[in-house]
Length: 133
Image 1 (cartoon, rainbow, N blue to C red):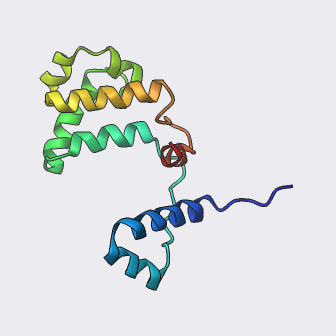
Image 2: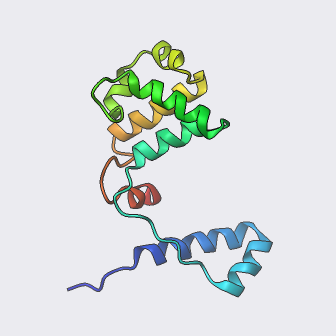
Image 3: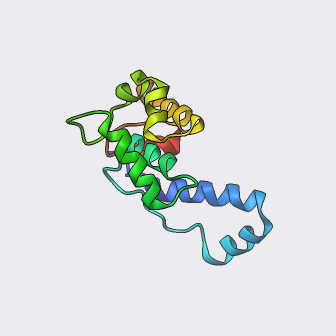
């Protein structure tokens, strides 16, 4: 039986190496405190998290929540649109719900990349899949 790899430690060390190379101040901090101990939460839906993050960019939380609520309302009976839903939805409908052209392009790209497997959707390994890719 192979020893279990501590994936979070691996990612944290890799990130610390990169940050140490590109930023002298962070290099000093990382030398003093180590690479950090950041864990990836289990069960995170990367697709949904990314779409929500795009919706919230450059808006107040209340405005983003309102617009995201309008977008979700375009899909009656669903708690959140599937990647297939977003890809099939005409841009004008998403714009009518309040998304800018840039946000429509971004969420459709996230949905398409979820369908192609670049972004993991709904699996407990979603954060790991994002970090690896």
